Image 1 (cartoon, one colour):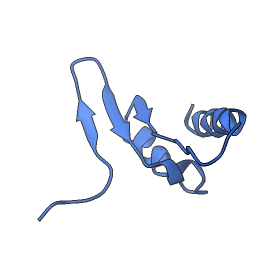
Image 2: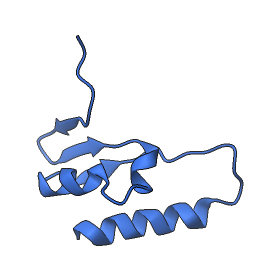
Image 3: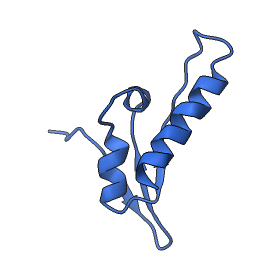
Length: 70
């Protein structure tokens, strides 16, 4: 049995979490819970090689996600 879900890695300097790409698009994203649980660095491999010129949209999603938990 392998558990699925959010994972958090604790180092001496920080708590690091990860979420999947689709989480940035969801109204209630896992980064909200991660931040409330004290995670300081949240990685999101938000990549899509199928759509060009998407960097501005990605940056806006990241800024909005950050402003929710700042």
